[in-house]
Image (cartoon, rainbow, N blue to C red; front, side, top):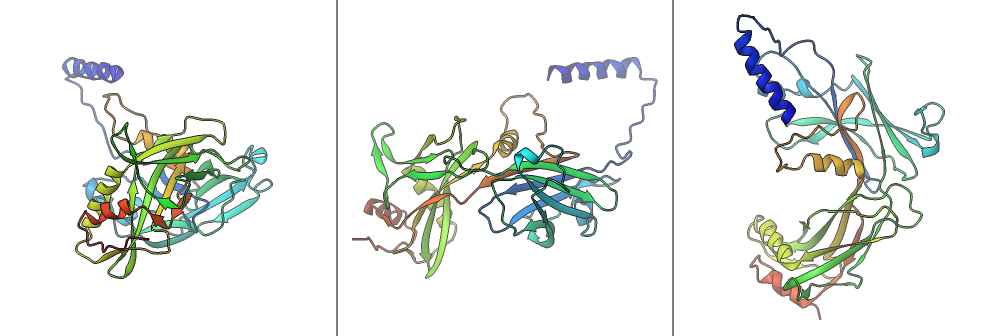
Length: 348
């Protein structure tokens, strides 16, 4: 900030002292190709996606440019997007011909629809693979522009296995906390299983999936809680998180309330509640922290781990969970009291 203020004062002085000079600045100068990449790998997912876009330049209304598909996306025949799997001890130099143990060509599709906004939001190109990913490997991403010869690269390791172990019994319930003066669930998980391949998760987020019947059809919502950083660098360490019943019920009321009037029931003999613990690696943690609102007036640098481009190539896991097929009566009564159309089917 101090540096920017100095430059500002210098600029003001130069305006008064050099007002006789003509300064030309062309915002549409020589264009330099800049590739934007967003790819988050999850070895538990049946499909992994890489989004590739480009910066644009031109004269006129930039808002209108951003709404044009060709301004922000490459054509299908322009790019080759691939990933290589390396053992860590063979990754030096990223010799894709002699040392890569796995090569994955990503397929191009336009079946993905981006949420509406100021940018182009119709059918959007995206690259995907259904190949199984292995935590033994470091993944090396290579994006080649077949027209210009430009090459963009990045690397990431996958998140190692970890285990959700509490609540440990099969019944889902909140217990009263004299300290918090409200009901809570104490969630616990280990940060990495012993001898698990991959890297330890550096940021976690608990979430409770609530499955229910709505007009006879199975539906669900997710109750998401705050993120928590992993303070440990050694494996098999327990991390805890307190999820309150107040927040749990508040999100149920908000999210199911938006669905309108319906007859709803609890599921029987199936997982009605599932406790998920999401995790991501260090790169995605840094990317997320860099993009959260900043209270300070200091300017953050743009975080990227893309070589010859900008964006993020990282990993996460969204599928580590513990399921509960029974629940304490008080949980059901509390949800019924929200007046969301749930029919009383308390388990014996």
